[in-house]
Amino acid sequence: MSSSELLQFLISGLQNGAVYALVGLGFTLVYASTGIINFAQGEFFMLGGMLAVAGVRMGLPLPLSILAAVLLSAGVGVAMERFALRPRRDSGALVLIIITIGASMVLKSLARHIFGPNEMALPAFTPGPPVLLLGAAIDRQVLWIWGLTIVAVVGLTLLYTKTKLGRAMRASSLSHDAARLMGIDTAGVVMISFGLAAALGALGGAAVAPLTQTAFDVGARAGLKGFAAAILGGLGNPIAAVVGGLVLGVLESLSVAFISSTYKDAISLVLLLAVLFLRPQGLLGKSGREKV
Amino acid sequence: MRSRLAGTLVPAVGVILVLAMPFMTTDRYLFKVLTFVGLNLIVVAGLALLFGYAGQISLGHAAFFGIGAYTAGYLTGEAAVPWLVATLVAALLAALVGFVLSLPMLRLKGHYLAMATLGFSEIMTVLFIEARGITGGNDGLRGIPYPSLGSFKIDTPSGVYLLVWITAIVVLVLAANLVRTRPGRALRALHGAELGAQACGIDTGRLRVQVFALSAGLAGLAGALYASAVGFISPTTFSLEFSVLLVAMVVLGGTGSVTGPVVACVLLTLLPYVDALVPGLPREVVSFLQDWEADIAGIVMILVLLFAPGGVAGLLRRSPRVGEAE
Image (cartoon, rainbow over all chains, first blue to last red; front, side, top):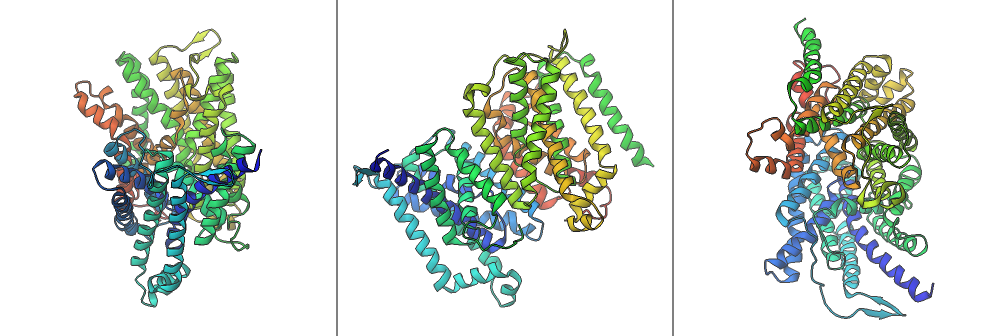
């Protein structure tokens, strides 16, 4: 394999990896503030793509329909937390898992009713020939995906470290009760985490839709990959989710290059199980026994 | 006294009704629909033990169902193995896979456990599609022979119905009795408080592995029966949606009960096929129910957890039992 071919595989790995990172960041945000794994996270990825396509078909300009898709998805995430999860807040993990599973079931089939069962494509953000780099071609949309991921990560980091809200979020993730005693509106923090998580998933879904097309049923697979990214890096840590996503994307793409393309999805899932079984705290997580 | 009488009378009447069905009707469609109910009951019995008693959730039981179906389909179709042998091998293989999977899963609980079973299920979906030599890929396997014992062939809808339901009744009776035995009590202790159970000398790890393997084996058995009853299998049947629907049945049924999940399973399975029971039903109503099956199941699942966490079992039960609340 020539070096430019290898570079091409690397680029496509980093492209998928960035999307996994966005979805994985959503898992990490919700987990950090609530200890819940949101099984509906993948559906926000689906909603982002589908709502953006719907917006374009209704005649909205592309940037506006993407923005609307992200905001609407965030609204759905907030509503889900407020009306389906908060009332059973103090129940065991099992109940909360099943509620998010129920929510993902409903979101997915509602999407099929509203948008139809067919695959849909979003127009490229900026059409044009691919950019050439050392003999490898980079689609312009890939540059968008990378750019948006970087903006999202920098924005999140700033939010976490520089703002009062971010400090409240970090405090609640350390100890919910202590944060509440210090006067932090923990319920508000949880709601914002769900909204942000949904927005990040939706952004990933909208950004990748011009390249891969989208459909009502893409959520489950995207959710699993995003979760794999988050768990690979170590749940609860945003940087780890991004690293996890990129590593996963590149591994997947290299496995296509060197092993086989048919089992690409299986390989990343086997990796997920291996990490879950062998190192549940993630590659970057602190070792030592955690409550899993 | 009254409730104990009802406790034996209602199932007895149910069994008689089930067995008398072939003498009351010859409706092929009705038998087909009821066969699906019976198959789901076999899976749900295992899941009820796993979820309701051991407190574990699996999003991968459609995959075990698929393992059973493909094993039986391949063995009876391609390899011409006798039906009974193929069915047993299919159930055992599913149980074995469940056993092997559950060993590393011992380290996991709650969210992580559910995600691991989901990952497993997706891996199997990829395998069902890509391992074309055995599974036939996206086209699936066709022409799987009907169940047969020696030269006796069960090839009528009512015969297949009876076979599935007799199996389901045997499985349900065993499951209902298992929870009253020593391992059954240990299972309930596991759900109540794992540490407490350990302190009482229960090997909780071994128990979790056993109950997972058992429920996987039951799903495999149902899958094997499905393959020979329908004669055709393809990967779309063994999808995540099916796993979720199975979990929905157990959740709607309520934890700590076998009766509740049975009722919920019958109701949810019949939902898209109500026209088999109510012949005069307008076509639009039926197609609406089929189209909105997943939405209805999902919304009902959320509502039940929000407002009636005991599920059907909680509604059937007059007074809450000790250790019931989450």
